Image (tube, rainbow, N blue to C red; front, side, top):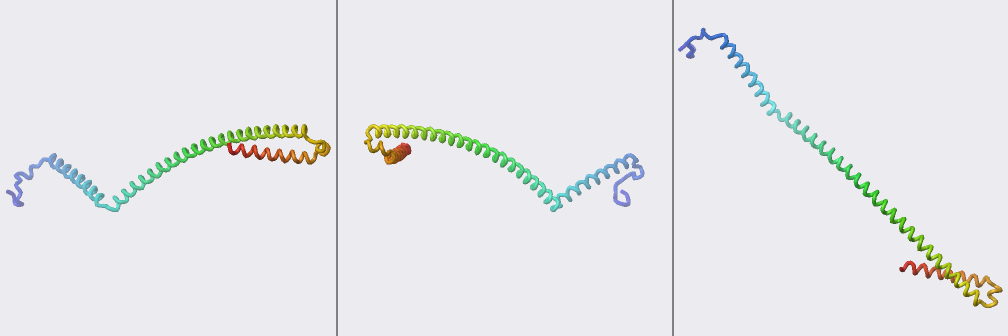
Length: 160
C-alpha cells in the first residue's frame, strides 16, 4: 500500500495510451454531464416551458379559427345558393299565377261582353218606341246593368 492509501503498484508504469483513453473518457463524461445539466435546467425553467405551451395553444387556436372560418364561408355559400334557388322558384310561381290571372280576366271580360251584347239585343228587340227616340237613359241603364253583371261575375270568380 502507498502513502496516500491507494493500492496502486506501479504508478510510474502507466502507458501514455491509457492516459489518453482516460482523458477521452473523462471528456465524454463531462460532455454528457453538461448535456444532462442543460436538459435539467431546461425542465426547471418553468417560465420558458409555459411560454412554449402558450405558443403551442396559440397556434392551435389560430388553426381552429381558420378552420371554422373556412367552414362558415362554405356554409354561407351553400345558404346563398339555396336562397337563390328558392327566389328563382318563387319568381316562376309568381309568373305562373300572373298568367293564370290574365287568362281568367280575359275569360271574365269575354263573358261580360257577351252578356252585355245579349242584354242590348234583348232591349233593342223589346224596347218601346220612346227608348228608341231617346237612347241616353237607356244607355245609362245598360251601363249600370253591365257594371252589376261584372261585379257578379267577379264575385263568383273569387268564390270558386
